[in-house]
Image (tube, rainbow over all chains, first blue to last red):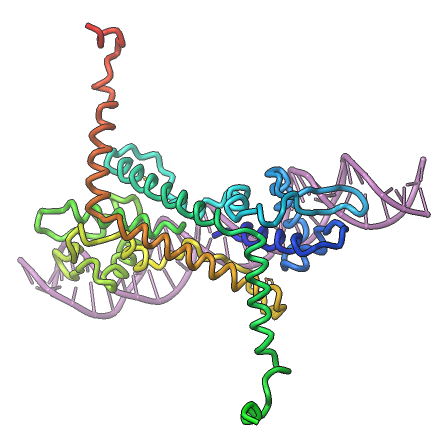
Length: 158
Length: 158
DNA sequence: AAAACTGTATCTATTATAATTACACTAACC
DNA sequence: GGTTAGTGTAATTATAATAGATACAGTTTT
Ligand code: FES
Ligand code: FES
């Protein structure tokens, strides 16, 4: 799948974390999600058109969420970005062989349904739930940090 | 999604139609599915490794199904081709920022589950069911063929 | 031995994706 | 009112993924 979706979600998570009151600039966001600021701007622009974020131009401008993180489902993001991850890509020749056309129609319909199922699943995930999960994961990972691993394993028993 | 999957399914449908007793050559298949014969051979080769088809080299060689079309689910094909349509593609830099890593892990897990759901859905579709559906569609399409459409719409009433 | 195939690697062309640059526009601040 | 720090967006370039094409070794049948 195209990476715009992951970048969008990642940015939204960052925005959800930002409780400073200041807007988050594309430059700062792009560093967090490791991509180019112009790309962030483009993606945030489409998120704004879908009313997921609020943007502001000019000095001290930038981005913030337009909804509560609990309301932003991944399905909303998915549709905003128009991923169509399950769209089958058929060849482009203009053949009119009815057998080929009918097979294509049947498979396109089947994957259209699959895409609906996917969106239903994404409906159940929100920016807030991802953020919480990531927090948990981060905590459990920190247990594995060098400073928490005794150089002498035996010391655990002591 | 990568087109190997659609080509694989399309080829399998063609093979299911072939009741002639002869094997289906890559050349003939490639014409049916509008792609290059070398590509068909490559795809059929991986289908053979997954025991979905039987291949035979040499003169009068070619391909045939190894299972009943009712047993060949799209999930089997999907796994054989290793589509991973929902795999998120993250940037490749070796950053060790724990926040980024945790977000990545959470999203990868979420989409791993989505992929499982997709496979469960594909488990319910078989080459046979697609073939039957395509037949039906083709019949209904044939009603729209030029020769079935009266040049004078009024003639319908007569 | 010749013919008709598959199996597979490699090269090339095409397309999709991402990074970069550029600049017009906007709003805040002094 | 001008400078500054930002977005919006288009255009260009670089890179990666995909597909097409070619080639040829290996395998069966005739
Ligand atoms: S190349 Fe796909 S329909 Fe012809
Ligand atoms: S570029 Fe993606 S983690 Fe750094």
